[in-house]
Each structure stands twice: as C-alpha cells, then as structure tokens.
Image 1: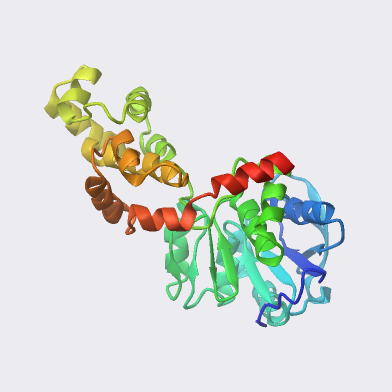
Image 2: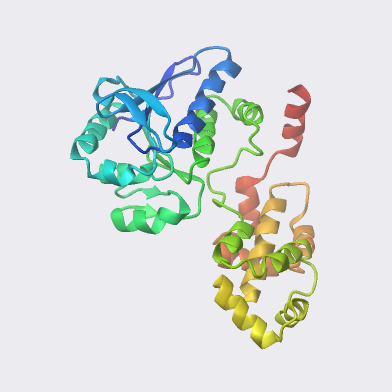
Length: 341
C-alpha cells in the first residue's frame, strides 16, 4: 500500500468503495453522501467516487437494492486516493473468495489510504492489512475479528481507528464519522462541522469515543428489561443514594434478592452499574471545558474529583483531565460557527 499523500486542498481525490453481494447499503451510502456533500460545501470537486466490485456490474445489497459497479481491477487509484471496503451479510463469502482478496491486495498497493466500514474489517484482515495494526469493527463482531485476525490489535470501544494509513470503523453509521474525519484531515475542522450540520448529524464524534452509551449497553444486557425503569431513574438521579439497599427498596425487593437478580440479569453488580453511569455522565460534561472537573464530580454523584479520577482510571484507563484534553469542544468556536452558519 502506498503512503497517503495530502498534497493540497485543491487536489481532487478519488474514493472507491469495494462492495459485494449482501453488502450493507448504509455502509456505502453513509460515507458516500459525506464526500458528495463535501464537494457542494467546498464549491469544487474535491472528491470523485466510484462503486467497485470484483467483476463489475450490478451488485445486490442487503436491502435488495441493486448498485451498479465498476470492475475493481479497472479502478485507477494513486497515492492521493482511498479504497473503502464495506461490510454486510455477504462478508464471510467475500473473505473466502481468493480472487476478491487478491484483487483487493493489488488495488491497495496503489492506493494511499485504505479503510473499512463495520464488518468490512474482516476483508481487510483476510488480505493481511490488519496484521500488527489496531482495528475496530461492530462491537458484536470484535471477538470474531480478534479470532480471525490474531495478529491485529482489536479494540472494541472506539468509533473508528486510524493506524499507519489503515482506517477501520465500527457499525454502520460510524462510516459517516470516519468519512467526516477524512474530510477534516484533508480540509479543515470547520468544513467537517458544516458537513455534520448539513447531514443533521448530532455531533461530529472523535474516533476514540465509545461506540454506544452505557444506557444502550445495559438495555442490551438485560434481555427481559426488568430493570429498565430503574436504570432511567438512576441516570436522572446520579447524586441520590444509589447503594444496594436504596435501589432494592425502590425495586420492592430485599437487598440480597435484588443484588442477586440484578447481577444475574445484567451481568454486573449494582455498584458497578452506578459507576458506569456516573462515568458516562461525566464524560459528556467533560466535553464542555466551561465546567470545572470538581463541579462535574459533584453533579455526577462522585462527590469529589479524586473519586471520579479513580473510576476513570479503572474503567477507561485515562484521567478526566486527559479525556477533556482529547475530546473537549471549543464552545466559543462552536458558537461562532453557529452564528456565521
């Protein structure tokens, strides 16, 4: 694979999407729309895009919609261009297709940047591009990716990862985040933010943020939904008494029975669930640099910043200040952008 070249803002870059029968339509159309809208916002053709497959012609996506493609070997890419491998239901068949894997390897030799959306990471792995690199895919498939690519360092948490010119992203809509990050790298943060607004994306997320919220994790883990109402109350009352006895009383159970049923149902103790909720709330508040870390610790129920620091170190492996340094939004800049938009 060639070294990516970002020569100048006036360079037209070619983005090729590799798809196959059963590819997920949104894996393609999400990032494709980002690059198309970037041209409109920039006022010139910064990106050309191509849909490619092994043999070319119509390809059936997971929705039944047909996409017309060019033959992968005929797509000319150079060091300023990007090849994005999409995921979908047909990924296992695609990984077993030695002709497709070989064509991917040959095309990637010319491209400057290689990427995947969702389970497209498996095809990158089959071609050997994840060896020695950090990578991510949909959270449900991260364990499978680690088994399929034992030489890769699979991280199940981030939205996307870039490692030595190879970008991998989490499930489906994370492809939009990945494409926005690429546009930002080649043009500016301001252009990427304007793109996010035009696409009605709630926020332009940095790659290192979690794939999904703690609330979604808890709903996913609790098959019966027995504690959904309690979880909602807990998230709205993080400064309240959230010890086992208080939660048990609210649930109409004895503390012992509540602790046992809760752990069996959710896979974690009540105390650990409370800690996760408070850390998630603190993460969101840390992205606003106008609020002090001590204030955040009080408002999220930690009581003091040292207790919050210990929880961050335990769950995230990072301090609150380091998290803020990485993900804080420039509020004043954001306000200026909204006023001038």
